[in-house]
Image (tube, rainbow, N blue to C red; front, side, top):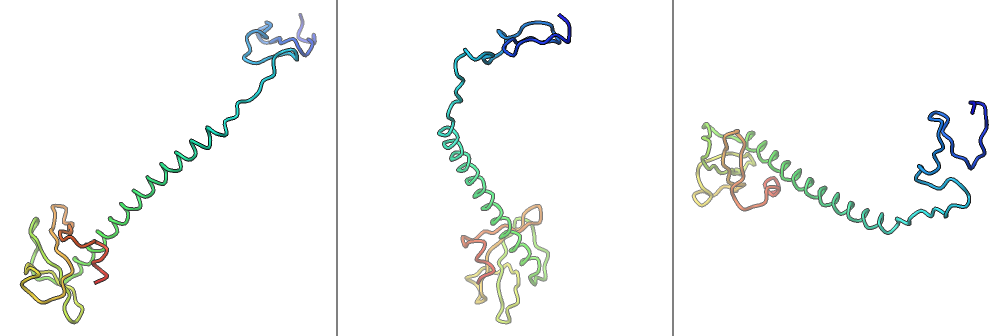
Length: 145
């Protein structure tokens, strides 16, 4: 058969391979074949959309909490490094942050029960020179006192 010969529409002939392929196709090729009805996936989609949304919301809340902790840590580290102190802090040693009557912030080794200054928090300097909050007060309350 030549390239120019025309086959009827119901005949599935591949001109590249020069073979009839109707039996090889995964779908019907004539009007007598059974009707192809798409599966209704609405329930499956809705169920999985709900699961995915819950997963994304959970991960978002975790990231948001980590961000808030990181920002609180940044704020109190910034506050401590801008505070007054006349000594070089030692890694692993506990220090206490106070506010004077003139609202100046200072760092001291004196514990809160040994002085009358406004206590802001207790901290320890780690190996990375980052201040770690030790007292049980919430980190974000530090600046609000």
